Length: 354
Length: 259
Image (cartoon, rainbow over all chains, first blue to last red; front, side, top):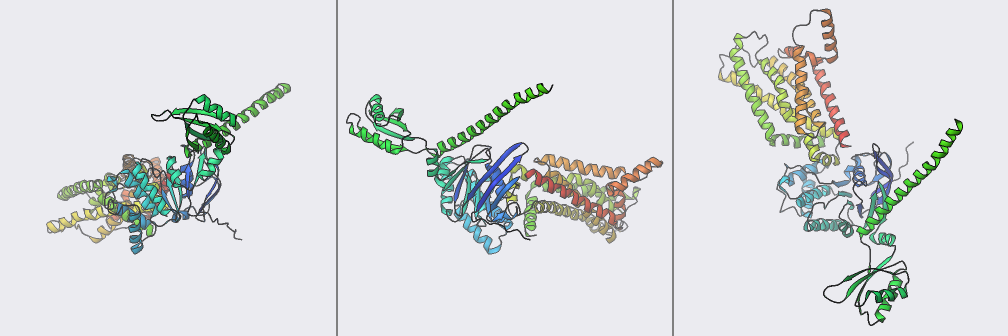
């Protein structure tokens, strides 16, 4: 009897994926999905399991347990089949130094099953898309700069119009201009191709991705759009006021409105008597607005600017990973406590038996 | 099959643009040519029982540890060192196809070297037709027999080279390992060639070794048959099995080290 297979509509569907290298757990119950046309940022500190996940999704290595479907292909059953549907740019993007760009792309195109007119058409399209046609198509790869090599890697990944593009650190080592080119490339393909993009450059992920997955110790520790993550990790409302006046006066006004509000910093602005005061309150944005009204009503403070600060991805990333470290450490402490309380009892039992 | 031909073309192209293979082929063929010339000159004065063409086959076989490593050492070791093997295996292509493509490209190059070596007896016959008429340098039976032996041994030798390249990231280590394995094989063949031991224990030991290692030890005796036009199927099978075994090991090593 043939088993009925559930094919997901998502481009990537991963459930409880686990992988260990000897005693080291690289992935411990990873679960996430990527929808069609979505650009998803894959973040995490070094050793979090990003590259392992990407290698599993590319069918280059197997998982120990769990389920993973990529472009409708079940990786447990047809590991090699998935490579027909994806493009992959590995970390450091290794390329053969002795080939010209066009030779390399033709070779890779043929390996991906393209030939004749179709190969020429795709070659033309990707060279144009990655802005390589005039500048680099006939140059030896070994003589190319890092930025060009990265574009060659992306062009290769795009050759057979994959449904999913997995990019491992695509902007590593690139200067801001080259990073901008890669970002524009992603923008051009937005909606057509799904992306799973791993990067340490958080501003890059923030600018390019629709959604982020933050990975730590082989698990997803935070997931969502930037707004969702901001809401989740925004414990206090942080706001800044540029005003003239004494610190004590301004602090007093704020605390009269909201006793829980704390003045966290005071910095002078350029060449004026104005200062930038940073406040933090757990009472929400309405409290911040009330404080603003109170400050404006006081003519002595002369309030000029008011901004409610949103935490950027970097702070969210740091908070999410820190929280996961704390959770793991506290569960370890609990385990130690349990074993410590059990041990004396066992020892007592042993002594009694003797 | 299509991806095999794509890999093969790329590898053959890689071998043809690599200066190392040209340098190896040049020195190998030069030394082979000079050796063959001196052998022909002194042939009448030697007690060599086999036809003169056999000397060329023996030289190609015993010279292969100096040639095969240059053809195979880069293939997998260099790809792994550069990381391009990982990129290659992301394409819809299996490790088996990659290893077979690389092996076959080296094998083709080895065959080309052997065909080039055939140019020496042809040149001798063309330049000195009267002096070489008794040497029967272009006797079809000898050419076919010697050629088949070279094809069989060459496939196994290149497979050993590919295996050596699959277990390391360093092409120099791969070259040295390949040289050592081939030299060991040829040394065993040379050691067991010729007269059998006379004492009972010696005969028993030699028989056990011959039965268990096949033409690994008796290859040189079999070569004597091939070069006079006698085809020994067991030797061909032995080299076929050796080829499959080392290519299998190379596939396993590539899969395992890439995991």
